[in-house]
Image (cartoon, rainbow, N blue to C red; front, side, top):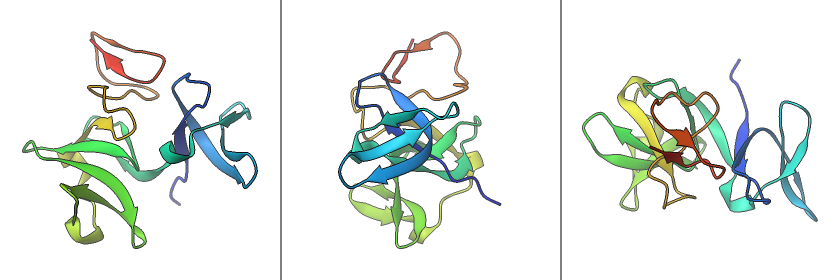
Length: 137
């Protein structure tokens, strides 16, 4: 069985939250975290975990910017019933994601000023995540 979970940037500005997605037409989207807390998130930043981890073990979500082993980057999207990528406005991979051993999450489309993004269990050393989820060396 596959894991279905989401992430979104908190409306209060305190970075990413991960968990289950709840939506309400009046109040908008919430993420329910592991402790059962309902946290309002910015609607445009909600992205689903695609069921793959990158070559370093980091979860890949919609909206992530991913680098291939040979240096090209693409944005992860959900299109026509499948997770795929876009590069320079073109859909790539024909609706099929490349093997996760060949990709690395290097950022996301929601925080272009970040040089990379952080998440639970971030694997990098020698730096830290700031409160918005940006990795700082």
